[in-house]
Image (cartoon, rainbow, N blue to C red):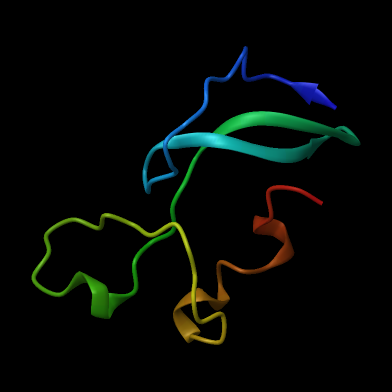
Length: 78
């Protein structure tokens, strides 16, 4: 495994639109790297908002909103 995070300090949490550590495959090697976290919010969560704060978890994977984001091409690690 390769670590590209340079002595990553502990984090209090993971929040939408901020960076956090992920593991992904790079040239057949697991690599720890930083990436922006979050998924777009469903329409019902955006009522009366001008910006999308995003979400960091998906509770209903059967919802049509999430289907396009759940394919294997979007996975961070294998």
